[in-house]
Length: 608
Image (cartoon, helix red, strand yellow):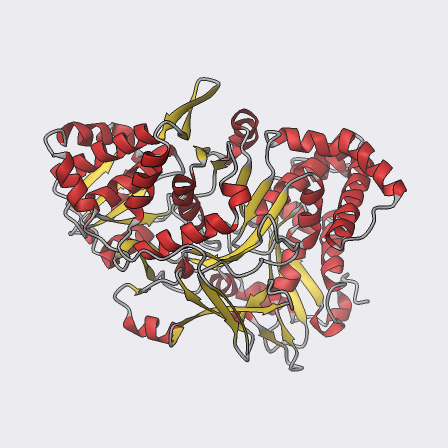
């Protein structure tokens, strides 16, 4: 059994809670710009002291409205400044937030509120409130609902004017490190969501150690980030709290269609994103170059960037010819991509799925080091992450100080340390099943290299065993296929079947551009595109590339392109865009059966 465990580099403080991170920041740098909010064509700074005052004012309003220490409060909102304001106001009032994805259905909202025992809920918009109204009869414990767009936060502030500072100070100090800080429900990709009890120490100790171990990213003067992935997810929630501790200026852009203009005006030094974002940046840049007749130049620049980065990582000398080529492409291509992201981005923290070495090396040569990490809701986000001073593309990095990871005999990743959650809420059976002593069993499969860098190879429950007895990890095939510009999602199938096959959906955003670039009608429907020979050939090309990485027995021998999309709204993706494999297998069982109803030799899929 391989095990890597790194001692904490910051002494533990069992009495500290999340509110101390803000109080300490205000004491250290009261006038530091901790946030920036959109104003006109630019951004208006909010200092640490101003944010602290707003937090206390809102906390007083919550107290006046009857919120007691330990009360659970649901929260449905997009990623904005107000999200973190509400988060800390609840902490200061002694309450426990139950974040709910702003895309959640009424049934999902009902489950989170009833299972948690929430007695109040804060929504952002009338749309969120309408979904809540649909299930109000199912959540009798919820006695108060406040809607931000109706000005209810300002009303709460007015209502709390008579609550004393001393009362807020008393309440914020009630919780110690072992107490519950928040109740976050899993995405439900493998069944009904479970409530993860994350403690104050989970946040405080992990944040203090993660900040120190990656100080080049988080503690450099002028560090800033623009958050655009949902703060209801532990990944962005963790970073939003870490930014307060580290003094990072944070902006927000909930509308990803406005992301590039926001990056251009905010000019962050680091980003937080999932791999799909980097794939979109690359693919849209490639297709834009293709449309302008510069596709060959872009691809040549990409190849040079990847070769350059690989040589640098391996410590090898850069040939003179590549130096010249790289300098030319830097002026023609790379500099423009850097400018599009604001011109100051040096690092990007990526998680939730493998990025792939090709994109990692491409962005590295742009001057952007992508620090891939690994973690789950149950580990308060990161358990491992590449460091600015110690990074290896294609891995999710070394163990974070204060954390231990071991690889069980069957390849399962198991975690213990300052980041591991306390328990599943009101679910002792699930809690007992997921722990081996103090080791949390993640269900993920991975391996360490000799230097302690972890690589994720798949999910334990998703391993496919073919009729011939071959074990296949779907992610190894799915991730490279999904990087293709016209592929939306892909699910590899073949459990107890004679060969591996795949269900593929198309990316409706990228498809029109690709079609136009390839002499086809850009308004072609998904139904027609799914049958189009050129589209099928492009998907085949992506599959051939993935097949080249595995043995013949593991390769995809057949595929079908569906004329529909999988989305969170359709119930096939989680809020972080992970596929719900069990739902897809149930809903598209007929399509899977059809893949195996005709001998493989009759398809147009290349079998070589």
